[in-house]
Image 1 (cartoon, rainbow, N blue to C red):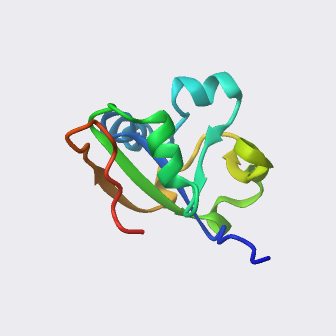
Image 2: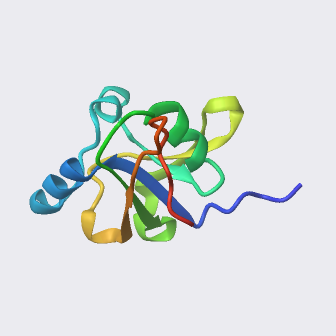
Image 3: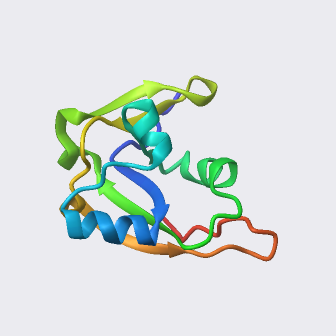
Length: 117
């Protein structure tokens, strides 16, 4: 069985939250992240399901990409939904590590429309 690509990880966030994080110099996470004690990220094969499950109807989203190797030991892959290994970042996510940021509009039904990744 092939190992899923874990070299790039993604964060879905509101553009407002990400803009505030850039000004502050780091992203402390959403209320859900803060409750769980780590920042929830997704691998390429996980991001579509994450968007559908947790971000339906959320306007003003963006998708932020990170090179997993740049995040160091604070990035841990742990079993989550369906036993799949999800990337979790422990600490304040450095906004300067973002490779790119792309808008995520909603379709007519409120589902997030992800950019090609």
